[in-house]
Image 1 (spheres, rainbow, N blue to C red):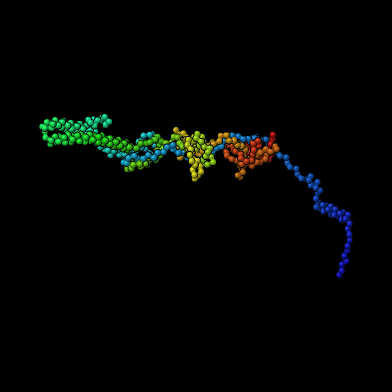
Image 2 (image 1 turned 180 degrees about the vertical axis):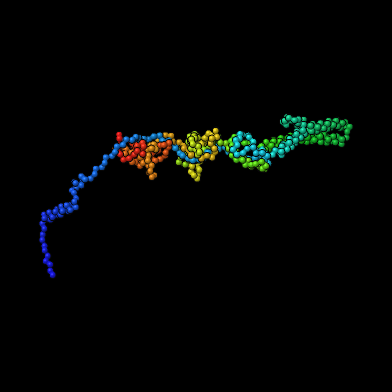
Length: 409
């Protein structure tokens, strides 16, 4: 079946009128308003409230550079006292924690054997002195070997032999004695001379023996004295290492004595701060179990850095006359290495910390704006601001009052 096709032409003006009519019908059907009407219906933003709060201006302030380190308080001196002689312990005079002065007895060894050695050497010395005719109390330096009894005896015999030989010489000239008698007298004179020289040498030998016995006697007396082991320094007994009845050998430790006034704080600083240390610098110590900080003075600095840790060891002395501090306590140190350093410093109250972020409230064009900052060191309720603020910025002194608002001038 054939359907006839109709064709017609619409003018441009009629087309525009039709489109406009359709838009009017569409807007009427959807209930849309005109753009001007839509703008008039939007709600106006509420004005910011105005608050009154204390402000502060951020500025550079003195902020000395401080190096922190950790260490412990060591005794000024620590002596491991050993025995100079071997023997059996007769008595122990001290125990852990006892206070001792220099020379106080720590341990006494059995002295009987040492006393016998002294007595024996004294007897040998007196025998040697008597052999050369030295009276008690007369030093060997005053002895003339020629006057020693053995020498005087042999000299007298020699002089007698010399006189006999001279008589025989005069008789020999007169042919009154035989040649054999003269030779016999001459031989007797030479023998007497040799005996005199031998007696003189014997005296010198006795003098040397006297010196040897004197040294042995001094040694024996020292050993008798060393049988009482005494404290080499003033301090406290840190360890007692022997008991009565024990046999100790030469050099064996019997006690440890420590001097705890002053104490030494020993620590180290990293290599980058090594050149900033100097003798006489003050160190602020926060000591474990001690509420109030103490002040110490750097007295020793190592000449070399530790090659493994790349750090420099130093020591600072802290007074401890009242023995309030004990050796071995842990301490944290603060060392001022640059007194003239400055920084942007704000009170701790001006910073809010939440979820790891640190923020403050900054005044911008009369309004409070939250500003994130980066905090450095903290000291005595003050914080160093590294980033986020500049000198001259105005912030709230109490960040807990901060919110989006206008600030009353």
